[in-house]
Length: 181
Ligand code: 5GP
Image (cartoon, rainbow, N blue to C red; front, side):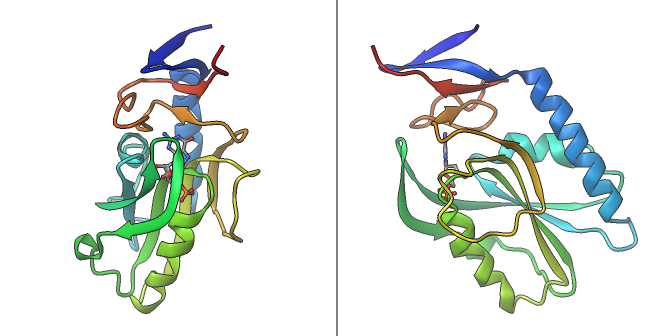
């Protein structure tokens, strides 16, 4: 089993790059079934964590799509701060468009619970969420998640875009924190 060390923490491989790639392909196929080039969605990827997932996912699409990267933040180290900052200035015009929000991971759900209601006034035809990872034991909000890659235990993970204090995003696999001995 592969492991990596970041600072004082050790992480072990949890989802290999191959397992992730297969899941991204499966999610892409599902999304291709739900949209057409006549009325393609705008894909809004929430930064920083979702940048790699969004890049891989949108290359699975058969339809031509607009991709917008949107900076949101709520995490410091391994804890959600509960306060969500959203860069609304970077939002595209959503009027009369389908929207797919792409998240790396839904943990407490604070980010989506803060962001999704703000879309209600933007005139979108539909809003769906695609998240690669979901921690069902950690979610504190009733969220509708149209596309979910993996349900995972309530443990801190890194890799494939996910960081620990800015490190680990470039790892191809996803790694789960190991107990400190
Ligand atoms: P939520 O608002 O659902 O609690 O978390 C949203 C954001 O927190 C995610 O998009 C991600 O950036 C960060 N986050 C949540 N859980 C984890 C985790 O296990 N590892 C890392 N690296 N980031 C996480």
